[in-house]
Length: 305
Image (cartoon, rainbow, N blue to C red):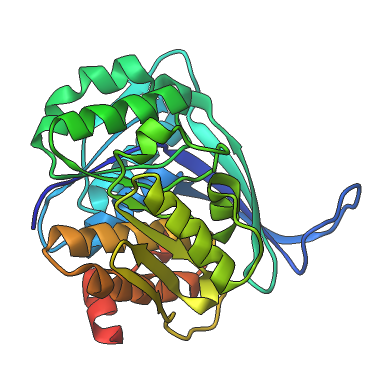
């Protein structure tokens, strides 16, 4: 397997479960609250570490010099992730997220960046040796955007394969950045925000994905929940069906999908096979509660095919 580097956020998630989520101005009674390691970057790194068959997954990010920060680093190390690229910041608390989940598994999330703001361009520059050693570099958008864009540019200068999970979507992504992305992995909402999707039908998703291909993106993989994943490039337009499952909590499903796909690609799998592996991993993830606590081990995914 080739080396995978995840550059992104680490948060401590406060997960609140309730029968239903409140509307504006409403108070509802919750069932439980728990604190678990999260953050899109950390979730993807932990998932990749669990799914990889070797110690080839590493992460760049920042946490606070506090109890939560130490717990996040320990959690990643336990998931077979190299943590030498994670800095403990003196002047910021660890990032956090409030995750509200209802009985259907649907969620709403509020993120407080905290120390993730320290994962800036200067810090990415200081980690250049890690970029040089990696083969696949994956980004999300919970750290400063200028750091994300610098990291993408530098990764391509070094000849790396770049994966961008545009979450949370910042709106349109600069054209010069899109041209550098080998794999873009929005969900349908993010696709609408970055690709000008004209509606909520497969044909609209396909049109929006093709417009991103025309902008220079190598491959667009749109995650569509229970429908599966839409794969579009210059030679292919195919919906890869989801693996049927009963959803309990969708919190880290997208992160699990992204991690599984990049691990499969790093192992030399063709794109459609990598997406099928990712769908299988995500199906297991949504059947469990929590973010990193829901992530499956490699053998579980292989046995689910």
